[in-house]
Length: 159
Image 1 (cartoon, rainbow, N blue to C red):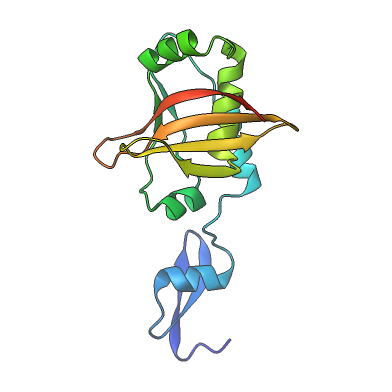
Image 2 (image 1 turned 90 degrees about the vertical axis):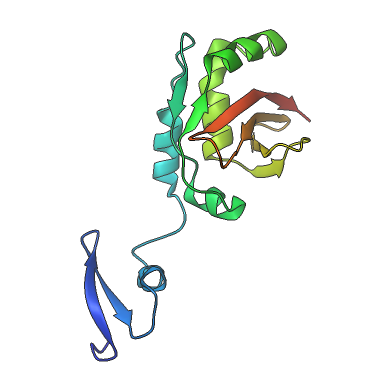
């Protein structure tokens, strides 16, 4: 690659050639060292970091870059409030304490499907298939006016 018609820049410790008239983000993507997709390793780290404390509100990792981009949403942490844990325990007794981390981790960070909820509110169902007829489901409120995206509900779903 010739150096005329552009400039070399170091971005996050990586050398990137930016052609004249090319945006920085396009140059980064073309370079191949930067990606809009969350790596499988990063997804697994997010899943592994989900450990729910049932005595308080829980701040969880941000959603994957590609899911945020597809939904047209900014990057924010995910919040699971204590009152939602209490409500969910009453409404979904089949979800044990040990299930919370698995359902949330799989649904939010390895979703197979993200679909709008049945509400006028900005709710979305994050669904992940974990067996032949078993899925994890998390209903997430993606409100622009809040500091976090908030989990509204979580449960198992069977085909």
